[in-house]
Length: 592
Ligand SMILES: [Zn+2]
Image 1 (cartoon, protein in one colour):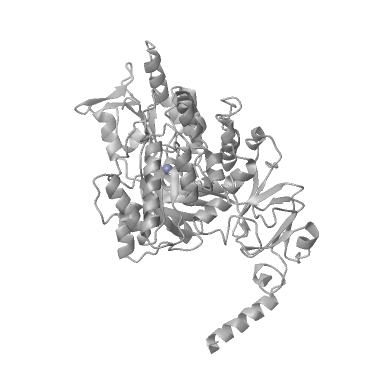
Image 2 (image 1 turned 180 degrees about the vertical axis):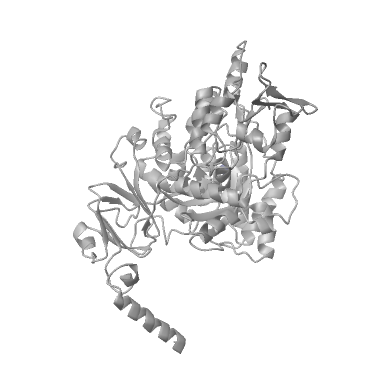
């Protein structure tokens, strides 16, 4: 020990002695900082599946056991919570998110299903309450669902909503707002018209016009053709600072439903932008600076495992970014690629699967080579895969990499994996592959896929139970915030997704009994797929994913015992506490 260090150690010891209680003393005595007792702890640790109490010191779990054993660690500074039989689980880990998109969506009003003034006003009010005053609020493609429905049923006289300016101004007095309708007509509120210096005297631009009151000539907020496009072009691009405001709120949203870790589709901006692509391959990948910025400000209330575009692999190697670079808060977990949008062996009559590789896919042999090289360089790989033929090929490419490259401990992911075959499920299990599935995709698509697939193929579609039985490591997740075109919004509440996994129905119970009920998960399997399995998949199962002594104290407390409750009760279950790194998080929503 250097003299310097021994002096500082002595000082620290003196300071600790002077402190009667509190975190500074924690390292020196055996008392806990936090005790949860009189609970049912479902640990997801097979060696000790159930306990009554858990104690936390600093950031770690120090005791899991019976009430009296754990309460023995109570000291004068210990916060003790009597949880009256509530269920305690490891913090949830969402295995598939697009956090950056969610941060952008924070400033947008969901509108595709809106064709009604009152509903539009309600949606705006909700967003305006969260977005700081003066910042732009946007929203896309109102009346899309109504237009689609009218088109399908050939209803005559379909009228898309023309919002009333006064009504919209009343709910957005402090935010400029610009919305687009499905037919590319726009609407701006008075704050936006004022910022853009548009007045009744403004002449109409070539190729467009401003909507005006027929009597007074006042602008009514509607912007047609070049008038709307012109205003949209004037909007400032979303800055990193603005994204950070959204990101902070999204992190809290995730904490509120008990999420303490995510695997996010992300990118290193400095590396990825060095390379030019024929297409925007990084759409939907979170700029890593968002996570770093949150961390710097003390707002990173999630542990982030990033999957970055496989196209950047050579840049990662060149910059010596190791396959598991990072730490317990922000780490590199592997490479992500887009495979297909439904490459099937046989077309499916009427279900609309386009049977194509994604526009970001470089071709079969080029991609097989990318997987081989990424694996040889030690990176784990995850691929978005939908169709049965596509998933077969991907499993072959993984098998090929495993056969040709030196042995190593791998984490290869099949992301989404909707359609496959019993043979490929067995093979994937033998290879030790991971499936990242989003249970909501089943009820979302069941009306389409469920009624158009022949029985044989239906049996191995969304075949979650078979995957587990075959030895595939199954992770559940959300794919939040939803589809890039906003038509689908993904529920990110793990309790919703556990409900979908356990029932294989939508929230109304359709289809009755569940679609192919033999593939339902047990609630225990679903919890594991939201906790320990994703931790294993990011090579972090030694430090998190179960309530085990020595692991990080990422813990949730639920209002109901979902292990014994009916699945419909999961939808009414709340997260009472979210504990991250030993600290109880404040998850209250901030209102401006
Ligand atoms: Zn995704």
